[in-house]
Image 1 (tube, helix red, strand yellow):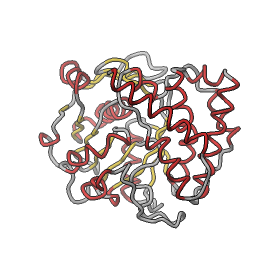
Image 2 (tube, rainbow, N blue to C red):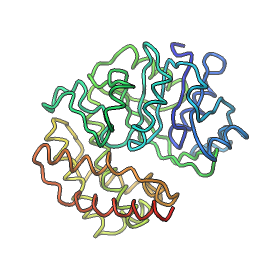
Image 3 (cartoon, rainbow, N blue to C red):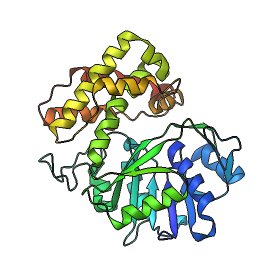
Length: 334
């Protein structure tokens, strides 16, 4: 076991599921802890972290160290972040407290991550930073892009109630170094996740995987929030499906303008979506819970990078304006 101390910073749906599976598989060989907050943290402390997996009858309940104060934990060998992209910058100082020489940080993120242009050899914009993803450069400075292992999640998950997480499918996670190397650390993280029965694939071109998933996230998430619709209902509406396809086409064009090989066609991505079923997107979950929405990494950056590359994104611009207003109204009500 290369990692003796492992912390999941942000133990919501995906982070909590990984924490539970890691803690149940590693036993006494390593210490798994979580940083969480609010009612979810209280429930984990009181009753343990409960995981309901698709097609598994008995739930998994794990007791582990849980805190909202990173200062209570020792420096970590591996840190896994489950926070959304718009939450990360505010957590930079807390994350930084848990780092030491050699600590790797696996960041589960939807959309364009703050580290995207680090060691990027395809776009012509290597080391470019965006303040809207990393306010004041906190993550770049306090965490450092050189520590990052990129992660694209293909796993449906939801916090069904405080302390309890439900997985809707048997998903997988795609991991990659920003440099494209299949490094020793990357192999170690792969082995760790495989041991916990977590599906994992390694990628030499993690940015391609980011854009492939973003075709769905940039369309389904905001449109589901604007309409309060399940995935199955979105895909059953022909008029909405047309608009989803337009967003996907824009996302694909922006990604390719930055040197990504998206690979999947819009028609193939839509056909994939038709198989998902009556699932609530993460943005719809946050909307209904009165939480701030993950707009910038999913939609705002498509527009910003479209401008950077002179790639038109008219439908994405419209959706960005609408969902931003929805977010403001929802936060005022909450």
